[in-house]
Each structure stands twice: as structure tokens, then as C-alpha cells.
Amino acid sequence: QVQPVESGGGLVQAGGSLRLSCVMSRRTFSSYAMGWFRQAPGKEREFVAAISWNGGYTYYSDSVEGRFTISRDNAKNTVDLQMNSLLPEDTAVYLCNAVAGREARFDSWGQGTEVTVSS
View 1 (cartoon, rainbow, N blue to C red):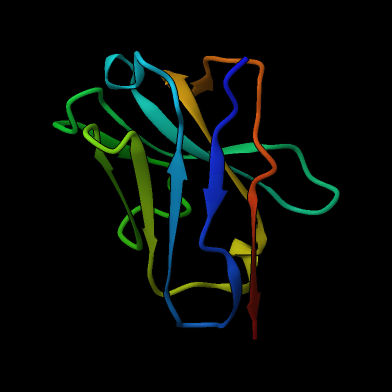
View 2 (cartoon, rainbow, N blue to C red; view 1 turned 180 degrees about the vertical axis):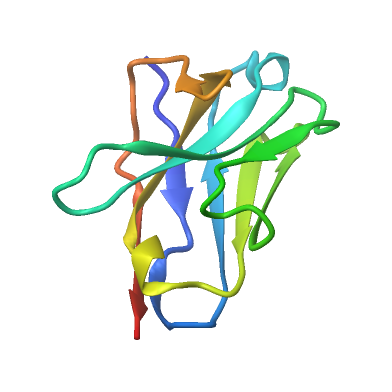
């Protein structure tokens, strides 16, 4: 199973920004819609954002709409998440995966990257 590798997390104050990146070394990367998910301590993993295979269509959870922007570079097999106006409730481990709708397509997950937003 090919696991994604996420990076870019850290500690930031409320109102700040972070840019997360995910690389997935899969030959068919450009064939899949890709998405970001997050899991806060003690909570279930939830969908955050997704982008179509060619980058032409994006969609977001209500909680991040207007603050986060997802993008991808098929030449580099990467998908990024620009997070602005961060809130303490955005604190979580962020993970990426190929998606079908708002569901993860593959069972294999990476380690994720941890985002902590202080108030």
C-alpha cells in the first residue's frame, strides 16, 4: 500500500495561517480526486476539503469554507491545504487520502501532520 506523507503542521496563534502539503507516490495520482481529513483528540476523523483529479472542482466542509483552500500539482504528486484565519477548533492531526465524494478511497493512511491553534 502506498502511504501519503503529510507535512507543514505546527503551532500557530488563532487568526494565523499554515500551509500543509501531502505527497503521494502513486503512479495513478492524477487519476484520483484528493482530499484532506482531520482528527481532533477524542473525536472521529472528519472530512475537510477535496479537489477533483484535474483541480477544476473543489469542495469543503462547512466549518472551513471560506478559510481553507485546497490545491494540487499533478506533476509533483502533491496536494496542499492553505489554512487561513485559523481557530482553536481547527486543532487536529491532518491527513490526506484519495477520495470518493467525502469519503476516503484507500484504507492506508500516513502519519498525518499535527496542527495546534492557540487562543
